[in-house]
Image 1 (cartoon, helix red, strand yellow):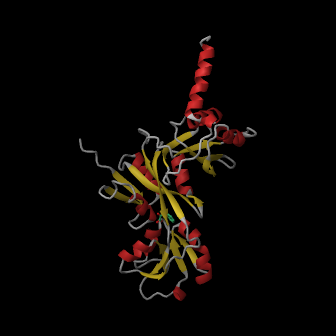
Image 2 (cartoon, rainbow, N blue to C red):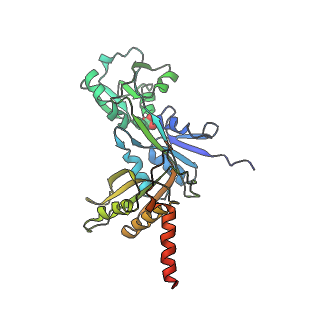
Image 3 (cartoon, rainbow, N blue to C red):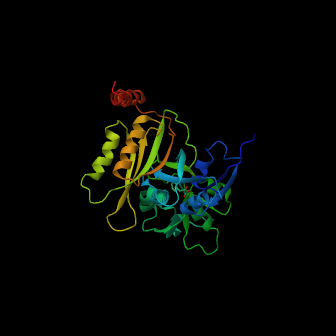
Length: 312
Ligand SMILES: O=C(O)C(=O)Cc1ccccc1
């Protein structure tokens, strides 16, 4: 039976780094791809069924978490991360033909791109003002509108290559040449990706209130089971001042006994804990598992308790 065609959405328009991430998904090239104007719109298309999966940015090696994504997947109808993709990032400065660097007063781009080019801008275009853009490509294409209220944009090299109306004024303007952004592919809940042996699990844990040591207890669930964390960020829930959740990436798959046991512990401490997915690591690097937290050690321990309960 032929596989059902998949419709993807992504933070658009065409030419974003997010589109480059989507194109790393094996079947995306031949699939229907619908650009969304922001992360929330992309995730809502998955929630309402108009797309099967959304590619969105989640974390950058220079600027940290993409808060719009962390917040949007932490609440609302549940979603699952099924894949992660890493994209090396390089930025160019573009403007309409005839504009020189000395003419530039206002620059638009995505907030994460601005944060990664700030030092270059300070040195080369001192005093330039930032105009927030919904994505790098949206900022660049906006220059082609007659009424753009900025003079230049920071975007991926591919946007300028494909738009004769834009010229590149400077290349490789990122402050950190090794910058990498991590993107996630998000679907509605369904069968989990198979365990690969080099996996990651993402959870959202609301911090229980008025409970001294709650964060320590949460971290302890991972530590005592030998589960390494690769990202932990606190975000305000937005409900009222001082109410936070933690967004956490842990090494391993929920099918690994130590991860399942840690997640069960989180659920006891914070029952509104949300499982966001177990999926293969983009770098395929497996982490070492201490013998006493291996699946076999958990199996033997449960069997031992069971035998005692059976009166053996
Ligand atoms: O705006 C884009 O092109 C995106 O895909 C978001 C983004 C912005 C800056 C760095 C990485 C991803």
